[in-house]
Length: 146
Image 1: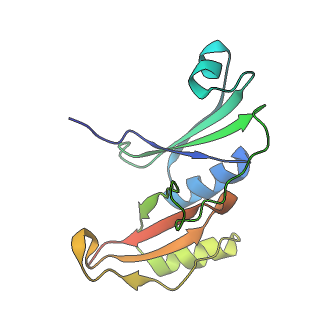
Image 2: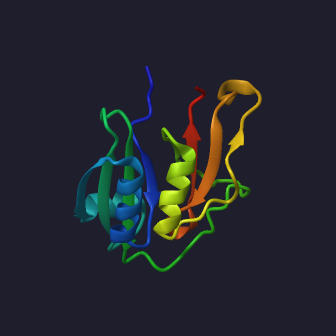
């Protein structure tokens, strides 16, 4: 049996990212935890790396977002545009997509469009929209069919 344990997102500012994802998910925050030393250096491939890890568990605890702020690894940045291979995005189910878009807008996070409705496939009937979150990560909001 396989299952997804968590989705990791590399962030540039743990405090800002934690505020965003904790607000969006209304989840329980653990961290930040400082990870460093030979094991971290070996697994990441970055000598001298230090990582601040913050975990946000959704209600029910089956879904977790891991925020990782790498320190001492250089200042490389990617543009996490979903149109580029290798990009990933979390998809978070909300009960009222318009209310979430409006609330997140007051916090400075904009949607890329009005909500759309999936017309086929496993997401048929779901309403969806992307929010541009911290570090320009696209976060998909989903509202289940009623």
